[in-house]
Length: 221
Image 1 (cartoon, rainbow, N blue to C red):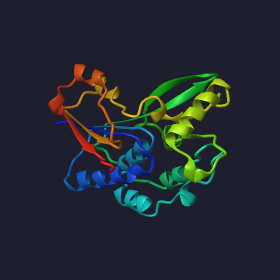
Image 2 (image 1 turned 30 degrees about the vertical axis):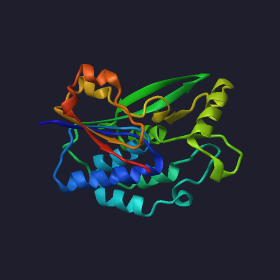
Image 3 (image 1 turned 90 degrees about the vertical axis):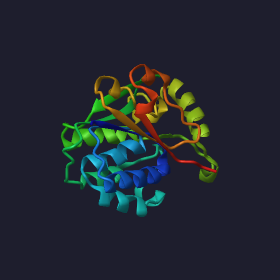
Image 4 (image 1 turned 60 degrees about the horizontal axis):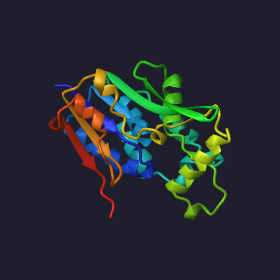
């Protein structure tokens, strides 16, 4: 049986996602097709490199000052990518690993989806970096910022052409990357959702029965 795994984005809530991946690993689950958006792309890359212990250490030592060193137009993630560059293993049970990111041209944005399974390390990490690169153009107090504020500012900056040429977080357009499963078919899809209001895109039910989709939710109270 072929299993698929969809890793949604959600910033620091990726720690929960990593915990579910630990559970899957301990239970001996192997996934043939993995998709990842934003922090899901980061966690998925740890999976691709069969680097679960490194993923646990990454999250146990997580703090903004250690991994995110700049807030100038983007939440700079180069230190995260430097951690991923160190990984040398490989999980041959994964046939495909798709990530998405947003490409900005002028004042327009479009989604790019790539299978990085057979990319060389540099090209693969370029896609993971883009998928998890959040826009951040905010000069107020950091403790008062919110995703809504940042997104509203991004829409303004986009129309002014400030992000022309950028490759940015895939969650801006699509935080649940299920499209690859249309052609790269599996028997069951596991989805790790990192938001209270998560809803499955309806189009996927044209190709899969509801009983073939299994969900793991992070419930925030």
